[in-house]
Amino acid sequence: MNPVPNPFRWETRIRFIDTDASGRIHYTCLFRYFESAEIEFLRTLGLGYEVRTDFAFPRVHVEADYTKSIGYDDLIVIEVALDRVGRSSLRFDFRVMKLGELAACGSVVVVCMSLRTQSSIEIPAPVRGLLLAARELQQRVDS
View 1 (tube, rainbow, N blue to C red):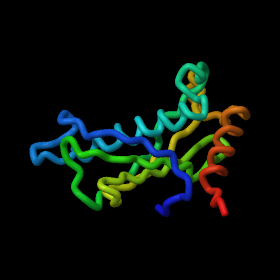
View 2 (view 1 turned 90 degrees about the vertical axis):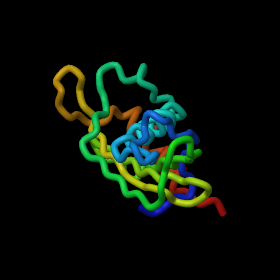
View 3 (view 1 turned 120 degrees about the vertical axis):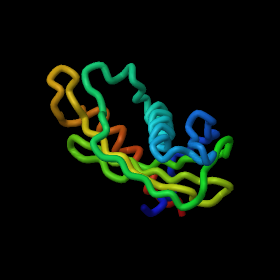
View 4 (view 1 turned 30 degrees about the vertical axis):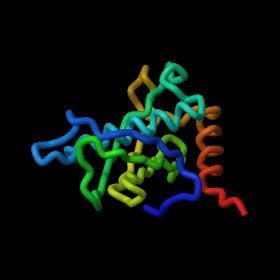
């Protein structure tokens, strides 16, 4: 995953409950932090859960790579970038920075789903427009 010029950044600390016996973050728990950063990113676009009354974005693919130890009470910054906005799906890329260095990275693919039919649907045009505009802003390199 290549960094984008203008990612959304969200800062947090690793909670004790999310660590394993070694004091490091449990490998599955990083996805909770990805989701929290994703929610905060979408909130900045006006796409909180209250807006999504008839559709949802369930996860259909997740992956993560760890490059440094992340442990209890570590202060991390999660960078969120929209890698792809498709007709019915999105891919978010995440970079976890600890003390200014890359500690982990990953991605999450979500699909727009009708809550009524439980089937994939096209992302509603106003929502897709906001996402495409956000992606364009993230990709823009100011000169």
